[in-house]
Length: 234
Image 1 (cartoon, rainbow, N blue to C red):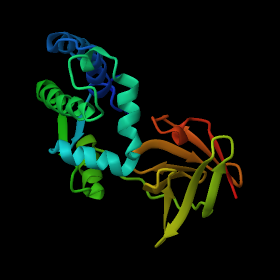
Image 2: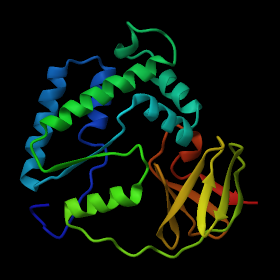
Image 3: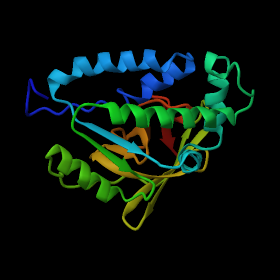
Image 4: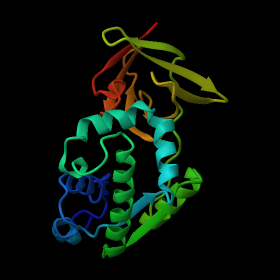
């Protein structure tokens, strides 16, 4: 950032995603959204921002990917939460209408990215070549990759008795994976010696206490991602 060249601040989904979702659900006009985004850029421009836009060309692929990493129930939970909002009032009363919402979001995000007046990089991520994508982003920001952290986590079943939710930790070819309560499999990436990122989810596993996993990061619609939730190793 301009005020401190040695500091990099990452704003995740704060420019487009949250704003588009909020304005879509309110059935606000494109002009209202444009005015709001322009005001955001006025605040950020003095800080010399750079924009990275990760996307998938196909809405169908986006939906299939969400099914894989978040489970079928994700769509129903989102639709049940938002179905009475203005966006849905003149649309079919069924969960598939959320897919229309995602298609509208995709079109608006592409338009806002094209309008953004700052250094920017767009990456189509369908191929899943994340090593390549990461290298492109590091080069774009002029950053160098830090060495991987060598950390491990005990394999086994971790249970939250109060909610009856089970997480499974497995090791395969020197990599660790989480099987969530929906049966979806996620790669784990060490953040520190006692924390693991979950690939494709903004959720962190904290293992600072032996025999426990504490959920950190961002809470999602799935109950098991609730921040502060504790799972005990059986």
